[in-house]
Length: 530
Image (cartoon, rainbow, N blue to C red; front, side, top):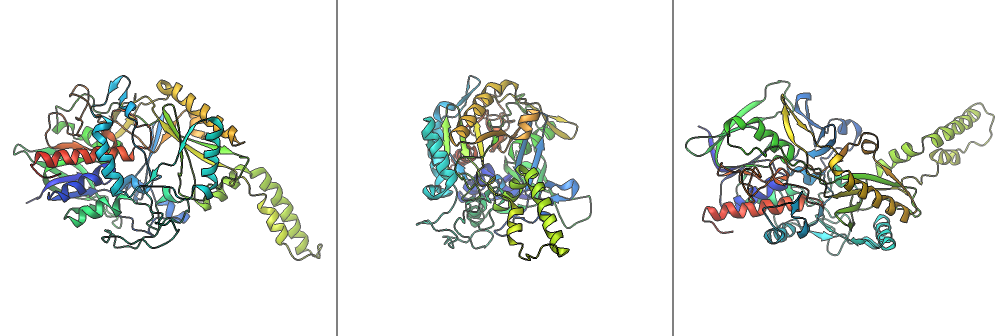
C-alpha cells in the first residue's frame, strides 16, 4: 500500500519550504519532494571540473545546482537544490509596493495589507538585517554617491545573511537548534560568492530555517525525488508519482514511487509547476484557460559599469548591498567572487595582455640565451599582469521592476516553450537603461549592456514569474488568492508561478509571504491554530 500524508509538497524553494514548515508545525504529516540534492556548507563547487557538472539535466547525467532555460525572447536561471533558489539568489528581501498590486489594469486578488503580517513572519524567520559595512564597502559608497548626485532614492535593503551582532566576519554562528545538515556555520566573510552557493553557511538559506524547522516537527524531506504525475481519486485524495534519481546509477530507468495525500502543494518553480500542470492536465480537465499565461521576467536586466572614477571593488561584500528606487523599478549594486576578477581583467584587456605577453616572452628568451645579465624577472612578471584596474573599477548592476506580463507558456511536444518578447515592455527597458547610463555617468564610468540583451534583445532573468496566475475567478486565473486551484479543492500552487505579474523588487520575500498566508488558510480550514 502507498504511504499516505496529510500534505505532499513538490519543491522546496520559497513557496514549498514555507508551506512544509507551517503545515508540519500545525501537526500535519508532511512529505517534501525535492528533485535536487542537499548542499551543506562546503559542498558548493568552485573548481572548473566541478562547475562543469554543476548543472541540472538528468538526461545528460547532470544533477547539479543550476538549471538554465533559453527561449527566443527570454532566458532564465533557476536552481535545483534542497532550499531551491535561496542558494543562488542575492539575499535581498524587499516588500512589494502597495501601489503595485495590479498589472495591465487588473488588480491582484491580494493586497499589501493582506501580506504585511506574513512579510513580518518571513523576515523574522530569515533573520533579515541590513548590510552593516556600508561605510567601508566601495561599491555601496559608489551607489550612494551616484544616487545623491542624481537625486534618487537610495537605501540599504534587508538581507537574509548572518553578519553577526556585533558584525564580525567568519565568526562561528550559534543556532538554537541544529540545522538539518548538522553542519557548523559562520558569519559572512564578505567574499561575493552568494550566487554560487555559500560554503560558509552565512546565507540564511531555507535549509537552515524553514526546512530544518519542518524536519524537526516531523516532516519527511526526500531529495533527488522529482514529482512527475498526480491525479485526484474519487475518494478525494491525491495519488502522486515521483521519480527517484540516482546520480551513481548508469541505468536510464529511474525508480518510480507512488504515494497519496489529502493536500498537494505544487512549488516546483514557475517553469516546473506550469509544466507539471500542463503534463497532467488530462487528470484535471477543468483547469482554467489562464494556465500558462502572464509570464514575466520581473523586469530583470543585468548591465555593467566600466572604468569608474573611483575603485568599486565588486569582489568585497555580499553580491548586493544597496538599492536605488526609481519610478517603477529598482537598480541594485552587484558583485562577484575574487576568482572571476581574473576573467574580467582578461576579457576587457585582451589586446594589452597580448602586447605584454610578447614583451615578456622576448625578455625571458633573452635571459635563457644569456643576452640579459639581469636574472631577477619579478618586475617583468608584474608588468605581464598589467595595471589590473579593470575589475577594481567596474560594477555589475542588477535592475528589476515592472515589465509587462505578456508571455504565454505552452507545451511543444515534451518541451516547455515561452513566447514572451521585449516588444510590449520596450518602453520600460528604455527607462531602465537610461537610468543605468545616468548612474554610470555619475560614477564617471561607461554603461555596457549584457551581450544577450545588446545583440539579441533577449532578457535574462533570475526571477521568472507567472504561468498559474492568481485571479478573482477561474476565467481570470488558475488559482485564488491563497494559491488554491479553482475547481480542485486542496490542490495548491505556492511559488512564483502563482504571481499574475511582476513583483517589482526581488520577488523571494513576496513568494514566501504568499505561501505563509496560504499555509495559514489551510490550517484554519482544518480548524487548527495559526
